[in-house]
Image (cartoon, rainbow, N blue to C red; front, side):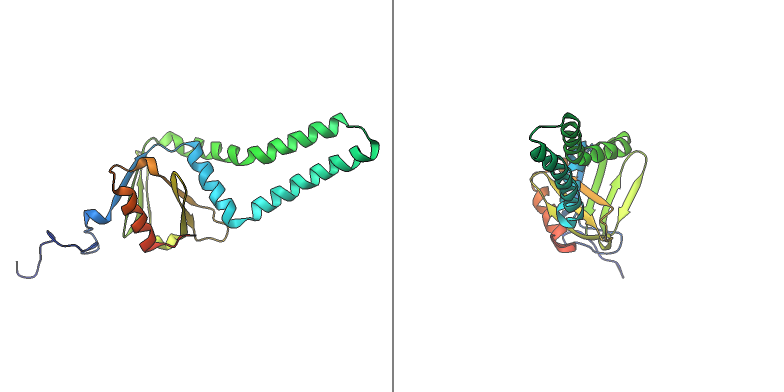
Length: 187
């Protein structure tokens, strides 16, 4: 071995651009579900707060629009009451409808095979491959059952939701957490 070297027995996470130590890589396999997307949308909403604020103001205006005439007349108007219940249902159901829509978009692709490494995140399905470097993400948040990675753009238009149920080995959750902590901050 004149100029080369053996990668066996080294503890380096990355030995060259193309060779990555297996201990620094976590693989997940899962089928995306609507609740996964809903978790990601809720995390996004808590961080941005704009959507939550707008929905709250919208709901408050509708309840006020119903409450003022009802108190003034002393009786409940059926049409206004039905409209307020409809608005409450829409405000409550909107994130769920979004999650169901996303599921229709991504669900047909089948199983997702995700590799998280020091280079970034690679997501493969039978129909596509998406490679994202760490510079795409502003940070991540961990929930009880997911890791949610948030894109760097101001509106956080892209989310990566990694369900913990997708890990293949027992120690992978801790290794995944360490990789995420190394390459992107918790938000």
